[in-house]
Length: 189
Image (cartoon, rainbow, N blue to C red):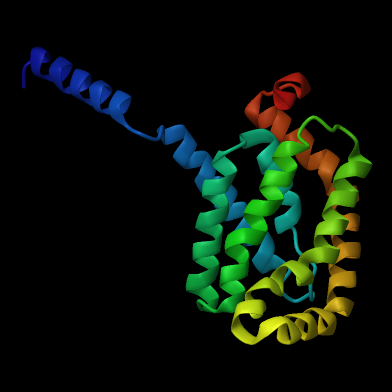
């Protein structure tokens, strides 16, 4: 192989890299987001309605914006593969993106208490949001009954979300600041 050939190969690789619709860095970031969300979910499965998914989606939306949506749908797909595709899976298709959208709209808020309250509220409303598909499956009575039966778990969910956010939001945000190199001002744009 001549040196001219290796230079041509290098320029071909560079040209292909420039034509990629999604940069490799973005794919890697999305992969890490999905892996941490799934690992966090699996690690707390033994505790009913205690999860870190809410916190990670909030933080990832603040730092990675629209890339988080790709991570959410990859996470939901993995959940379906691991646990089966049922009505609960349909719920995940709109619940987690809704949280990302709310977070994005509130991205300029810097108060820890705001994020704790958002996490808690999301946990408390989780059952109500999950009952929506049951409107189509069994009507309003089924949806309402399903939601009411889950209220004790929603209370646990809300308290757990608040507590986890209170404890972990600031340290995880600091880690993401260091990893991404983004300043607070950049995050609010």
